[in-house]
Amino acid sequence: MVSERAVAEGRIAWARRRMPVLGKALADLGQCGVFDGLTIGFRLHLEPKTAVLVEGLLAGGARVVAMGNEGTTQFGTAEALADRGCTVLDRPGDRKGAVRVHLSRIAATRPDLVLDNGAELIETCIRAGRPPKGATEETTSGAFRLREGLSGAVRFPVIVINDSPLKSIVENKHGVGESVVDAIVRATNMSLHKKRVVVFGYGWSGRGIALYARRRGADVAVVEPDPVKALEAAMDGFDVADPDGAVRIADVVVTATGRERVVGYELIEMMPDGALLANAGHTDAEIDVVRLEREAPGARLAPSIDAHQLPDGRTVFLLAKGRIANLATAGSSGNPIEAMDLGLTLQARSLAALATSGSDFRPGPQPVPHRINDRTATAMLESMGQTPVSLHEDSDD
Image (cartoon, rainbow, N blue to C red; front, side, top):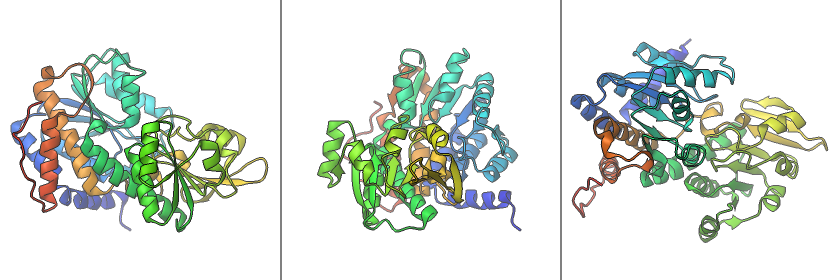
């Protein structure tokens, strides 16, 4: 029987071969010695594609102390990274409280740079009085945390990868959109044709989920409080609905907002018998799973599907316990490799910019520099066999 570790090695090798943009960036940065001697606190889903980034940082001379997100760490990949010299804190069977412990352990190493996914590691470093020289943040929910709960407390530069138009288009719209819809279909083995799919949130991930659900034949409605985004959804051909009306006739409800409890228990009580709930956002609290479990405890029906019988006898189904569907659902592999080739290249080059030119950045959250976006987009086009036309000189802005 092939071990989980051996399977992971094969998947890492498969991903590495299909990530030419990241591979070239890491080779260039390694030759320049950008990361030599630095400690990098790494909080991102630990799976084959992110492993390619970690092994590149290690090869470039960095010390990497890593943890993933609850329910998304692939432990064969974690074992492979540990053998390469990465300090991996996640362990099989970790309880929820282990996340805080691991965050504190990374902060205790006094990392020079932080790569974060939700801004919890950044917050922990700040609270511990051990701020890094610079950091990157991957997600919408992390950007909210930086700009709201941590407003004024972040006195070092944080490059928000999610603010890059490249990540929005390639990774969020197409990567998340395609892989979340695919995860739902694979886990349930049902067709979406003429199913009523309700998407909460019309940010880039929500746009993609709505698009790919429609491509699968679904009738899609969008719940979006921002009137500009709601208008965009309507112009894109989707129904725009209020939450109460939308969920009453929903077959599938997907959250993609980066906010907590956008689908509360009160909304769940309105759903028809047989409705499926899934989450595509970073936080596993977009659906109020805690109260759902309290009011209608779940019973495992199939891999990654729990049945919750409501007090009146109707049943709703929860995918992957409300965790990020395209990674936490059994058999799912996250965003397509090509999407992550681009997204992780943005991460690598942004970390390098902070390592070499950190004083050029202002404190606080800020977008990916234009020169990194342009260079990465050009490399991605070339990897697809396309020839970009240069319309302007490279900018250092």
